[in-house]
Image (cartoon, rainbow, N blue to C red):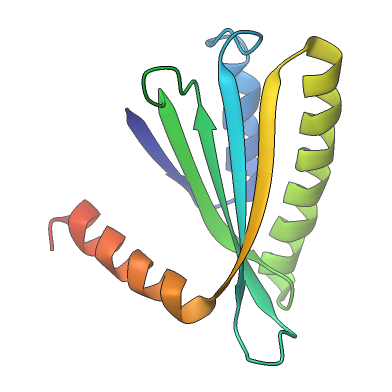
Length: 127
């Protein structure tokens, strides 16, 4: 399994454009999980994490993670808008081409994601 972490929405979108020539997306399943991570109890601001699994037949060929989007800051907000547009295009393209696309969304307190991110960072960086 290949794991890729992205720092910008543009890098994510460019990578997806490239894999359309690499993987037979008309055969392999594509699963997009969107996590809305609330920053405050009033649920006024959130951080977004996108997890894309490509080709989960015997296990995913690739898993992508992008977690820089927000609904409250300049750059993070632009990332969120860009990802929203990309998801809408992905839905249309999947329908037109007959891809097996699943999209699911969950809401979590940010503290839970922060703990997982710390664990991931230490594992990934050898901490």
